[in-house]
Image (cartoon, rainbow, N blue to C red):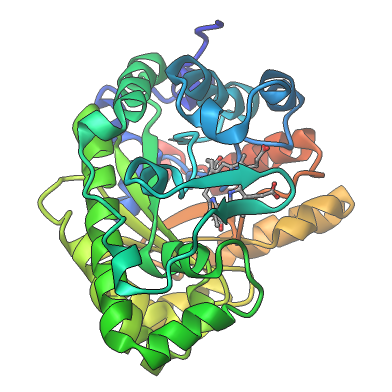
Length: 365
Ligand code: CP3
């Protein structure tokens, strides 16, 4: 394996003696000034990269998440190729749920599919508490990665209770989340029992990653935008708060992300995040007004824009950087994950452009 993993530290000529904690990414999460706006991409490790497709060709998705040497290599691929300011652990939101005893698989082109969906109280009991020994491969991969990455921070992650519950109740991906909402409205007691259980699993999974050395964590509530603010506050916020506030003593920045969350941004910030992820529908200056001055924002290039000609991409990147200046801290990212058909060279160009446009010379303060 190549070990050129110095990331951006050596390449952009800014030596950073403080290690990952002093990196542009962690500084932005903590609303501290840095040498440039940091950038990474959700799903940066994945199908847009030929080296990823090659390594995954004969290994099923879940199995690849359980092999530390594969996790390490796949996590490092986008750092080497693009010079992003952070790595994100290669895993999946259903990995801890599988470790907790739920029989599921990740089907190519579909997503997570659950053998026996959760519909009754007895089903909730099938979700066991987890600890390090249930996910030793995650512990091992994070420890290896922290060594290989040097000054480049590693982001750990987990799925939020609502998004996990949606997969477990529906049995697979759903556009309407109809079965999930039917259970939520029809049997609130069971709903809260399920989400309470999932919050425990998620919190434990994030703690394993933090103890192994990740520098930040992201809670993915990808499907929370399916709810009104009132229902989000009633049925979801207490459980996401249990996870994020449960990590308030962990010493790492917490990012809270969802899609279609324009109406939920304030509430998502209240759950205990340091950084709120914003999709492309809400300009970052509007988003920061909704979230408040005590949180950084992350986002928010539409992933589909990366399929457009370069002048369009460049104009959008510049617009987002300008609007991001309204926030007390900005981590550049997409509004959702990299699409598989994205040309990886465009991602590399976006990283260079973000760094160039946002670069602050020391004499400019
Ligand atoms: O961001 C990264 O680079 C880290 C890797 C990562 C994966 N899944 C790898 C993966 C992360 C952060 C996730 C999180 C995840 N998984 C989410 C939340 C983020 C989001 O996109 O909203 C969700 C909803 C899932 C569930 C899931 N897993 C879906 C919808 C899919 C895609 C199914 C498909 O094939 O279209 C997966 C599979 C998956 N997870 C892939 C990758 C790279 C593709 C599988 C493959 O390469 O064969």
